[in-house]
Length: 177
Ligand code: FE
Ligand code: FE
Ligand code: ZN
Image (tube, rainbow, N blue to C red; front, side, top):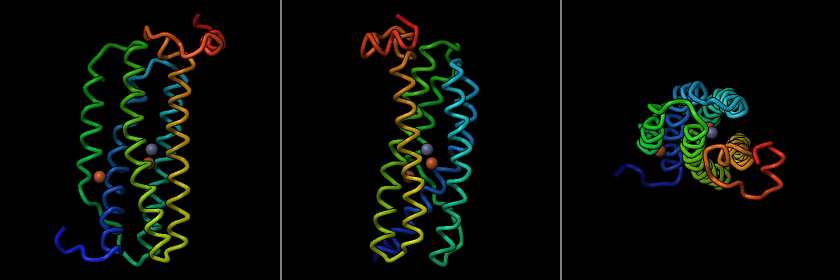
């Protein structure tokens, strides 16, 4: 870290970190999807796995655009989030497990939203306009993935897990009241 003296170095450091974070998610998302009993949740996680594959390619394009080889740096943050989320996978399939899977996946999405927000802004500031655009595309996908998970939780998974639905209307729409 001592050798980082300018924003470009800091940018590369963060890109390598998120590259490793995405690669960890490529392994973790299928496990979460497999453990989910709600079909829509499983589908959302599988869709996001496909998006994540594309996000990895985008990062490889970003490395190329800034004249660097793709390289990972250990992302301890995502490793910790995945490790905590994996604890839940020892539980039996149930709506409670689904709620826990959503909780774990949303932590991962929020980490990514923070990381991509930073690198997209830095890329812009460094004059890497095309790289910034790619990073913003991924940022938008991460935000949408997060919103989808919130929607699934509120549309019925939380209520099925034993919580009360946020509104009677939504609970009825999901056929759970
Ligand atoms: Fe991602
Ligand atoms: Fe990290
Ligand atoms: Zn994501």
